[in-house]
Length: 162
Image (cartoon, rainbow, N blue to C red; front, side, top):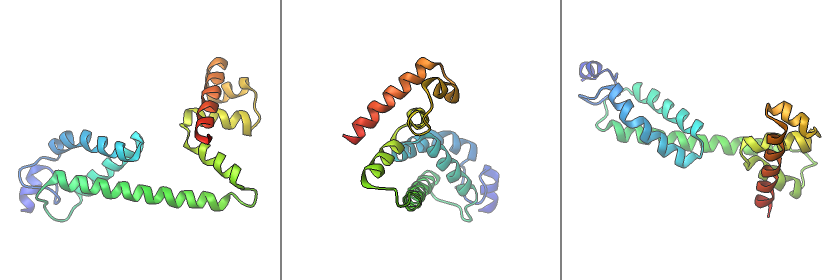
C-alpha cells in the first residue's frame, strides 16, 4: 500500500489512485471557500487549508476518502484557530488594566471589529491625535481618502455601538 501511495505522488496519507496535485487542484477552492465562510477571513482560510494539506501529506496511514479526511482536518484547524483567538482575546482583556471600564471596553471591542482599513485611520486620528494630513501620510493615501476612511469608520463604529 505504501508503494501505491508513493506512486500516486501523495505520500503515506494517500488513497489508492489519487494524485496529490489532482486532489489539491480540486479540493483547494472548496476547502478555502468552506473555511472562509466559517472564519470570515480569506487569509486565515487559506492558511488553514494550506496547513491541512501539509498534515494530510504527512498522515501515517492511507485514507479511504481523501476529500472527507481533508475536510475534517480543515474543520479541526478552524476550531483551533477560534480557540487561539479566544485565548488572545482573554490575554488582551487581562492587559487592559485598571483604566478599563465598561464604556472603554465596549468601544475597544467595537473598534477591533472594524476592518483594518478603517481601524488604522481612526486610531491614528483619535488615539494618536494626528491631523487628517498626518493620517493620510501614515496610511499612504491622499488626504481626501483619509477623510473618507475616517468618516466611514466613524459611521461603522457608531452603528456597532448603537
